[in-house]
Length: 235
Image (cartoon, rainbow, N blue to C red; front, side, top):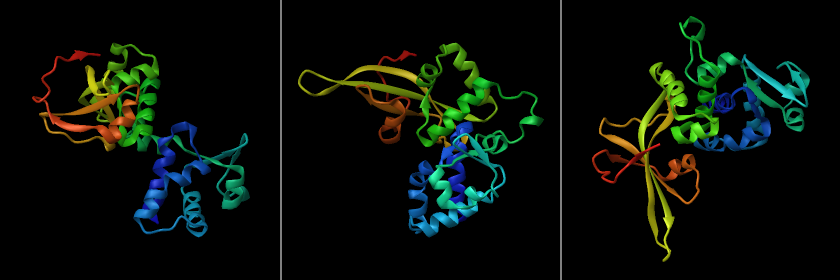
């Protein structure tokens, strides 16, 4: 049960200051529960909820009202589900999740753009997100996002890995063909990064207008840097 509680806490922390509604939490725990041979039943949910409520640093909100862990609506799983309580991790828990363990002792704090990037990568988890996609999401120019990410990388909070994105489109005869090849970087929180050799890089096949982040989950492959011989253009 302890490891499942830890998984639940990770899910909550990954959503940053927005927190996670209890109705959205349960589906995310199907895999951890199954891997430990636990059924997704009311008794298990009740035990899991009791463990979560006992964790210091979790806050509870519903319909514009904030609740303390000892409040009756929070002590009752049924009442919490009826209210669809949103669970929010305190800032120190969110900091630990993204790798900021002692921010007050650091000579340089974390700027708002840097925290925003960390929280976005926390949501991406093992899928990661490309640097070009992140720049588009944030509406930032390439050189501006570079300095934000470079700072986080130097502090060991994120990992940037050379990535080739091959964009494919269907030809006139229904066969797919390469339309462009773009060099970018794949970004992960340090804890979720794929560990590559010095001569390896990620390669993503992106078809039509699919999401790069999603395709990385099921279409990324590792390849030697020397294998890719096509002319590559920079973002």
